[in-house]
Amino acid sequence: MNRERYTVRELSARTLPDFETLALKKGGCWCIFYQRANPLRRGTTSEEWKRRNRKDKRALVRTRRSHAILVYEGQTPVGWCQYGGQEELPRIDARRTYRKVAPAIGDKNLWRITCFFVDPRYRGRGVAKFALHAALESIERKGGGVVEAYPVASPKMAAVPDWRWFGTPGMFRKEGFHTVAPLGTSGVLMRKTILPQRAKKP
Image (cartoon, rainbow, N blue to C red; front, side, top):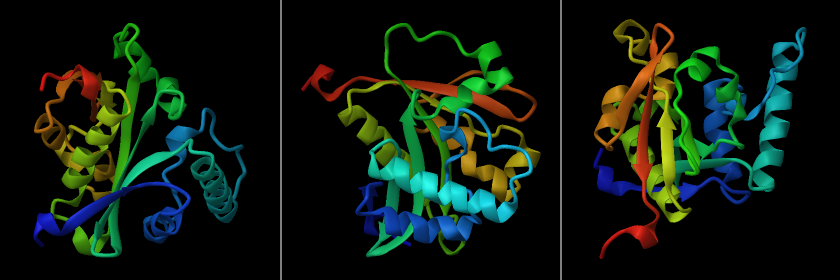
């Protein structure tokens, strides 16, 4: 597939149906785990969990508290990349491994890139990399700051499709990220500073 044929759109009330088309292929996650400060109560059934996730995700999108880049080939949605500010993705702060190693960023804005999803039919065709680049451009337009990513660094774990939704260290390094610290036994914290558009030299 020619990557020049891809286009992107921001997640919004208008593009929510396209996001849901892809989310149903993911099995009910709805890319909301990191948007919850606390997990759902114990005893929640799988079907209840999926319904609650879908309902809550819709509410967040419609109130502009959920951000993602959707990638299209023509009019077909083929993948996404979720990103957002620290307050929008608070579950990261609950991770003990993160709290132990994450240095302070001072007064800069903190952005997070938490997950990717690509339609199985389009994997291995650069969709996630295209989405990542578009997400970084969107963050730049929104004022920039420090951008974090949490890819899986363990080759054994990265070989499992369900773990690749965090991205790989290599794809982030190509976008200028540097490694800050390991996260547990399989992950790594990476960061990049993005200047706002107005601060860049012509």
